[in-house]
Length: 225
Image 1 (cartoon, rainbow, N blue to C red):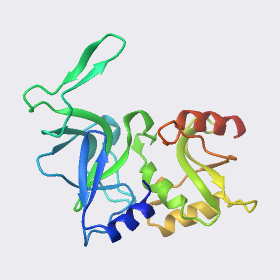
Image 2: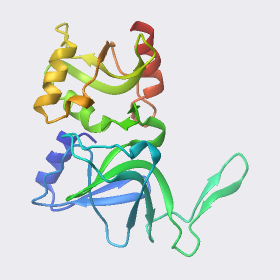
Image 3: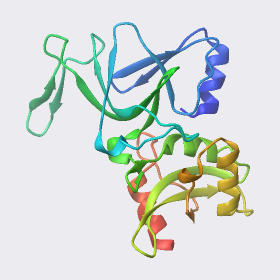
Image 4: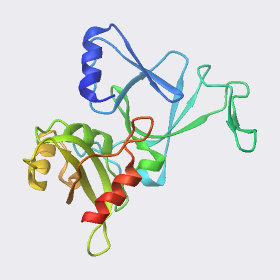
């Protein structure tokens, strides 16, 4: 759910319960969710942000240092077990309720609770710094010339990995890379996070679950850059 749609639900409901896989959090009246904000954990759910090598230099979108890592959860809301269907055996079990479950989500802590960055498999790290890709994508989609957006890492001509904004334009009037960088700056993103390449695609493919198919997008972007 995008930031704009979440804002509409927060305006209409007393409390919004967000379900993120096995994690859950709430947003209530008076809260002003930022892009990617997960809110506060539901009662009984215990979160733990475990440091990860890719989040050592992480900063918030406005450039401030952030306490970030991979999110583990613990509590009665978790499922009893996760099974490997091919081998017909559990790969994780709830046990007595005191086992931590690694969600595979990267988050950082802020005064409002936790802010979601990306899945482990989808993370975008440039020169050892993880980009707040989800927040950047939400901001790019608010540009009048952008219908959909993804932030990915692509190889530059010198072999260096750089940030790339892959967009599906709203019309034939395609925004330039500078247009998009200026737009991100107006949303408070630090200059180090700005994309250095732009890939314009007819559409951004998504998975059967409606998530951005980043592997496919990265392949399509590399083919035209």
